[in-house]
Image 1 (cartoon, rainbow, N blue to C red):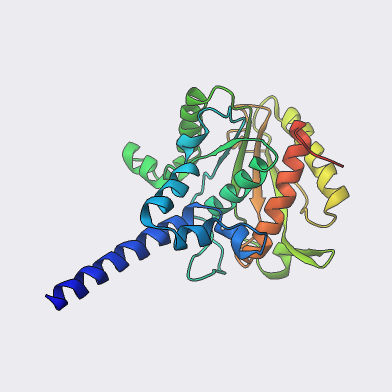
Image 2: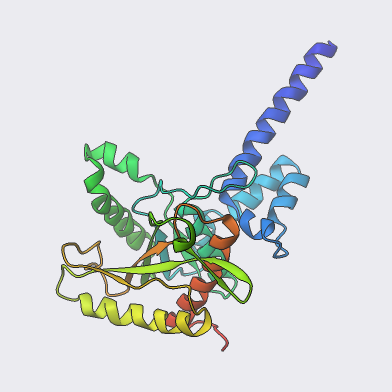
Length: 266
């Protein structure tokens, strides 16, 4: 009988561990780890399973139905990762999207992060990797149909730059460098450019050195022909740390807030 109890306890422990690991990926653990007085992770671990499940669901997409989201974050290349990790959790571009979502929410700007897998979309249609932008556009259109309040669209990528080319220090803090990419292969790209410049001016003023020079690609549109408020952001490089990603997410969220005329205070 004692053996049965032991095995049962081990089973519950394993299930709880796996669940918390999944929760660790979903909620804003990066804020907790960065020492920003966020307690979601500790609450999730200390509370029972049902309380943790509620925390997870509150952070899920379904919880924003009544909040009129205006920003959509997605990742056309959603498997792009960063080398550094915390507790064996490897951050990727979806992690960055979640960081941005949560930073904006603190200013009462609500957003949606795309959770669907690009690879599954490719496999479903029998496409190779070159079809990623078509898949991400399909997902975007689905979300726009679901949330007709969406106005601003951010495709977050990770660049291939390494080492010091991917980071900068501002007022003693280390940041992942950010670069906007403009696809010029459509008629209205200049409107995309003018909108990017608003955020660039803000970042150059308040986070001097965080930007790499905007890259212009004449051969592609990168779905920016969908809307003049469509942005592609190269967020750091392979060697950036979780702390650097978080610091830059705060900076970019500030710039987005300023751009859309939110609750930003000078």
